Length: 393
Image (cartoon, rainbow, N blue to C red; front, side, top):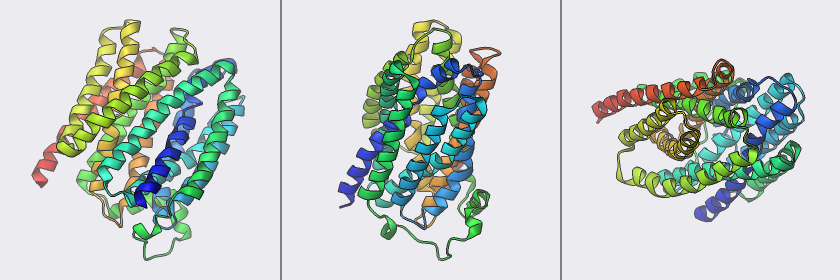
């Protein structure tokens, strides 16, 4: 029963994550067509990530009280409404408002997804790999589809996105399993105080340890590198090379194939055959080396080739860090830990996207320098974490 329902969940997950990426390749075009400030490609995402950061712990706490399928339903519909506002925006204020509204719910849906898998999985490490694999492969495929739709018009991409997001939300609510019997329900009832997202942060003291805190720092810092690179690349190839959204979509299609291959082989092998508390450092080191290479050699072909390879390798770190976080939780705290993990991912996204947008005007390569520095720092912190981990053993 669990396997069948988890399969259904993964199918819906694929289409949801495809739709979530429909707007990304057309966002630079939207900014240019509507004569908006170039920094908006980073500021808009940072606005969404800020709300994601604030509300993810709250959604994680709420997962302990209500079925996660209900949270996925509510948050998918909220995300769709936020994208309606974003797609119709004609000013910077409207774009930021739409992204902030969407950000409240994106934190909830991704937190609920991780908790749904953890609560129902019979092999948590394997299924978290598949969760991340599907999210990233579908996201890359969605980039391709969104890029093609963007050739028709920006509005076409947004319309398709809203329809699919809402439909997936309904399917989550109807077809997914009620995971309530498979998780520990808190003894105290949910109070008005718990609705405050900052109260959810304060509750982190019930599960936080020095080692877990280091994992969260690594998650946040590496997310700065990821988002600075990702957001800048999308705008850079439009601004510097004059490439349309179709090119971005093609690159993402190639990344989807590579991601599926790496996560279906290397990631599973790392989870099963290695100590992930050490092997995750190698993944961060490779990301550091790849980002350094584009700062040394500025050729266009290398720039694009490295991006494709980097995007595929970078995805490997996500299930490793997620599993490391989950392994340091128990049945009573796993929902909150996953909410906090999602929040740290968003915190890194805030700074990565915001700084990338703000410093781009002073030098198009500066966001890539920021990305390199973030991955280098996260690798160094990774070595510190491993030293602490070895002492624990």
